[in-house]
Image 1 (cartoon, one colour):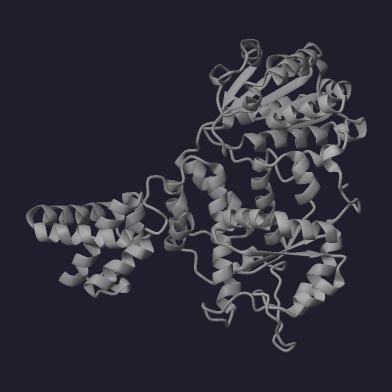
Image 2: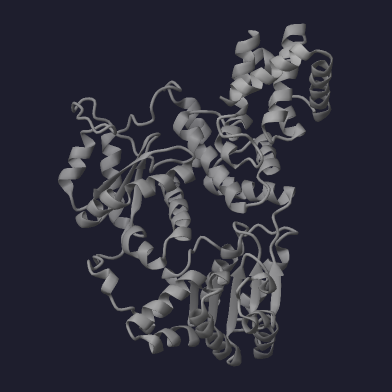
Length: 528
């Protein structure tokens, strides 16, 4: 079940980047992923009307986010937990939508997936690699359906006239902390390195200043010196993680603190909504009565005159009361284009901390931490390959680990560098299109020269095998973004040997025009 929860959490996280908080709350947040096969995802909702709407309007969208998360495409099937007939019908169907006989109707839920035992499960399985993982047990599926009630906390059905609904800014809703953060984010699971330790230390100091046992003088010092706290850096490096960590920490040590978190874009949308429904005063009270205001991606208010005006007064009201303000952006205040100068100067009043892309060691540590959390064992060569080629985004690193775990479990494949290459090919900066993979290069070279892939990777040094090996290394270097050490690990050689192979082919191409044409033609075929 944890695997399904992790996959769906990742999907929702990606969707939240593109859709408003209101839309997510209305249609997506209560959905649960209850089954996953190599080609089908079963998604449950409580209401029949929502199931029908999702099938007609959002199925393709959800499938695209699932593909982005998993690394392979799946078809989505929506069910309603109140529709028993549909459940029975689904149990008697294969995932192509065709009826099956009762004796062959088998479903298997992935809810019992234990990542820590992934390799054992695969090794002990009697199924062939080609066997579809959708040969499932019907009883497990029904059990998964029966357990769905554990995940739902509300029976409220969203109103059909949501677009005309008046914004709710009541105090009971404004500061309902549990709906504003993800408890999975904390300072303890934020991996600290040289690139982010200053921002981490600043956020932790601010959060600790809200301890009820802290001396008032110390608390006042932090709130003055670190207010506002402005964190900037490229997307995917952990800024939102730090904000959630602050929220969770303060909520733990000072539960009565009023915490408001909002994305910059949603702040604008809520302001527009308050103007439309004449709830301006309630909107202002929501933000100006907060003890802690956190705004993620504040750069999105730039260029919006009315929004900047409103936030200017909100900022002043909170600052004058020594209330904590924490802001994040993709760049420092001075570089936010079309942001009013009076806001830029105020953002620079307190502490500015940047987050840079993680170094090699930190990238390794991040992936190890994610893999351990998921119970996935990643070989050291796979970790090094990913760390060398995914350099700029923590989210990519974590996504790569998830994809590897999912792909390995669903296909029965061993986690190797080759599998890692296929999973992240679309993320390799400067590489050829996704179709140009290491596996494809090995395949084409093997076919052209009649040398098996096993021999190319072997220690055999006969002339024909060695020549094919040199050519393979040269083409991988030219057509992918793999480093010399990464290529060396593919073939069990050190980087100096790889350099020697490349030089050998380059020299031969200079001396032999026909050979040069042959290699170029082979590279053209690989691209096709």
